[in-house]
Length: 217
Image 1 (cartoon, one colour):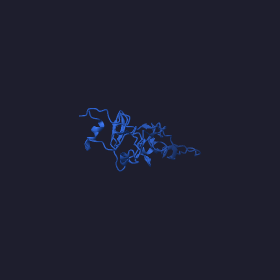
Image 2 (cartoon, rainbow, N blue to C red):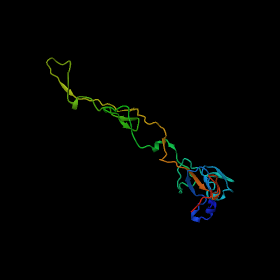
Image 3 (cartoon, rainbow, N blue to C red):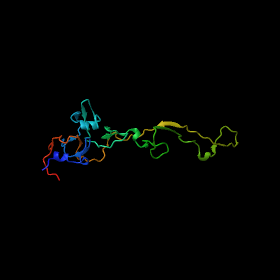
Image 4 (cartoon, one colour):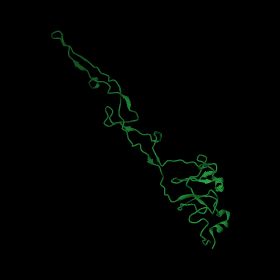
């Protein structure tokens, strides 16, 4: 029978976790040197090995430093844009105007001569109401003349038109959308807690501190 603590001492370097390593587990309490990442503060002296690795990245000052708190979040690898400790993202999000696709809104009324409502991005526009009046093709019009000499035949013809002035007026544009936030979480299966290794194999309380003397092969 070999205790976990004694067996751990015989691990080679590549078999041992090092301070700052992380893992996911269904366990919800500290165990065998693994600390539940819940954002709590730790003493910089007691947990000096871990403090040397993460420092005050996740908060704290003086003699206390904080563990990370990734609960309900997705962890990611760091890069120059997102250094360690960066906490970004939203559970829900409301689109801004800049984020919306370019689109048109239908008008509640149809422009003159149109059978259906128009679309547009403004609430008013200038247009011509019709051109000119008169008979088709400006054909000659017959006219009668009064007060002529008896027996005289007088006739005349002519054309004329009226120009319809252009006009600027506004149309009401439909308002659409509920302006509410949408779910911004990717498909996720929550399977356990995140732990970080403290560098102290005897630290922890569940289900034991140093082991239950199992037979290890």
